[in-house]
Image 1 (cartoon, rainbow, N blue to C red):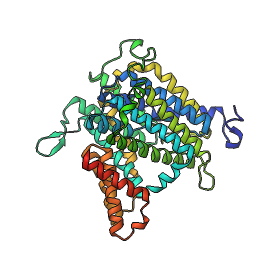
Image 2: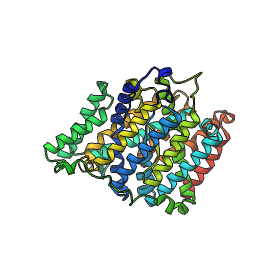
Image 3: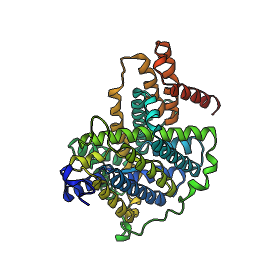
Image 4: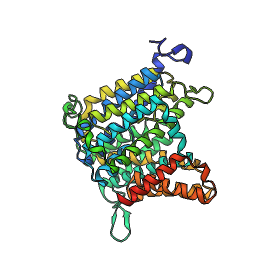
Length: 433
């Protein structure tokens, strides 16, 4: 085992790798409760989504650890689950079963692109500034959903939106959760989001805002059945061959592409695993990631992707794939704690959404705002996502304006042909869908 994971070459050991795997798990364990809470808004069975989330995370992390040998854990991605629930299903009126089929299709396409090497060409065709804008825009969208779930932002007939009732006990509970989570993270506590959720749930129980578990059966139980969601992606695969679903699948692909690439580079850089500014075994890492998406879609969850929270484990010494294997083991154990879903209400999960949004919005600093031809499509991409309640719309608007501003500026030759193709696709999308 030591030889397979190259412990000596990487200067690590079992104890360090175990602690790193546990740290990574704690840093991303919030997804076990946030994902079911978000996807259940589409009508999906909450317990089944909880089990699917844990299974997808366990399988994805295990594949990453064993095949690519990176200390990177995977789970259903934040942002992609918001797109799945609020843009595709709720906003677009597409059944969640068909949306799962779209996730499955994107995973299969991702595998093909990875095996053929086309992935690099497609990634390189999208300008870096737009990649950054998409990530930041998704962050604002997620934070907006969190503010709504917390009751901090509500409907207002005069101004569309307004501040919620700050005297409401449920709103105050969410505010408490946000404050304590921010304090934990500011102090450098890696699992601050997860600890914040635990403390918020406890305070909610004390003040009667969160149901108190009844005995041990309210905490631990058998593994929930995935029957309500399992295989629905296959059963509805024939429904994806429409223009609307094509845009959905392309969006799943696009976001997963760059989310994965960015996370892998970030984690590998921190772990000092980069060689000559290149990522060793990148193909294997991407194969593990795309395979996890396929598994997740089959059992019943949105796109599974690499988690930047893996840097928490690397920060305490994780260097090998054994870190990811340990994280996978904890996700398997988590399957037996589904009763806690009743305790983790939307007010408890809302702070996690807001804070993840803050983290994703840091990409804004790297956009070339001083160049107007870049600033316009980037700004519209970021702004449109929360205002239109659609990640796809934000991407589309940015991809339409980018070729226009670049051409007017006399830089048309710098725009990749793929971008012109996407320009036409999104024009048709807005015109007919």
